[in-house]
View 1 (cartoon, rainbow, N blue to C red):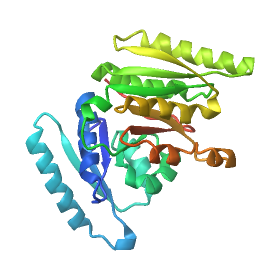
View 2: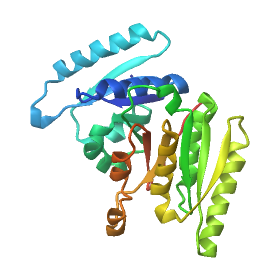
View 3: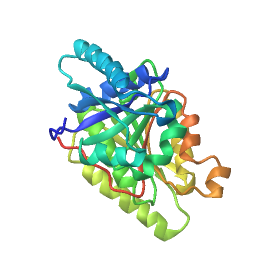
View 4: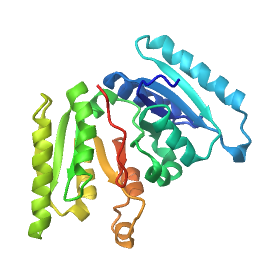
Length: 270
């Protein structure tokens, strides 16, 4: 499978939400013109058998391939430690993003800090085509704002999605200047393409921006929210309900993409 082709991976733990995750993975992979790979990490506590896991994924892969002849579908089973597996997915197997059901948030989110690709948490069973037509990107003074916008541009370019830049407003002049510079860079980049985008003046400071952008996304009902995730959560974050885990838990059927805020991610090749 080391063929240099970028892939959308789906976290397959044989739970109830796995089929929904695969549908979202199919949607993203088909839209971006990438391969789809169903991925299972053996649970040593359950003493799982690699042959049994491979047989289950092989059957699912064959079923998906039978319905979608234009989509390359593969599967991968590993028994490594999680961090080693994440490095292998990016460095060896060209992982562009990992799609997982929201029921796996607690298990997966702590490991995002080691990933060079974003995690996309999903739950919706219907209207998948509508979800990925509305992309919400919070833009504050944080450096990662431009990276979030870059990922949004992939769906803008290939799915003609409307991208809403949810802009913060800062009290301090230097912070506000940084916000404006981030916005200018993003608008200049988006100007190269033909997808629609808009700026939403939130009048919300950056420290509240994640919560505010979630509220805006929920008002649209069908949307995808892209946020930066940090492994270092402060007491204030927890107190105000701004942790990524809480954002995901309150996101209803939105799709929520979390991008590692402390590491450069693997970029899309068109």
